[in-house]
Length: 129
Image (tube, rainbow, N blue to C red; front, side, top):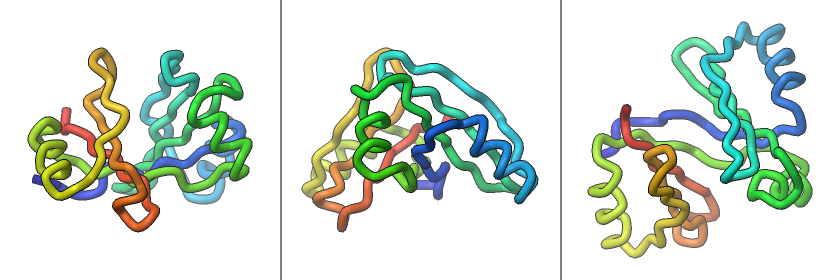
């Protein structure tokens, strides 16, 4: 069902500043960048070796990322787990008592597990594309 860690999501004030730091320090490379107005955020996938980060920058104060940055000052947001079938993974996790959040009918094939049932860790389930 789960194939491994897809990426680690990190909320940052500025993708460009953080990417510059990661590039100079660790040789990071930006793989993609996308604006997600429905979520009020910009996301950048950054690769270091065979690992990936998602850098998330708010587009304004009202989205989840903006509120996270304001309340916590940025940092680790979520751990994304790769799965073959998002619908089956969500059903399995709901059967185990998890509340599934954040599924978007027109967006990326991802869902989140409420952190209350996972020891305070926000997990994202991401379908392999």
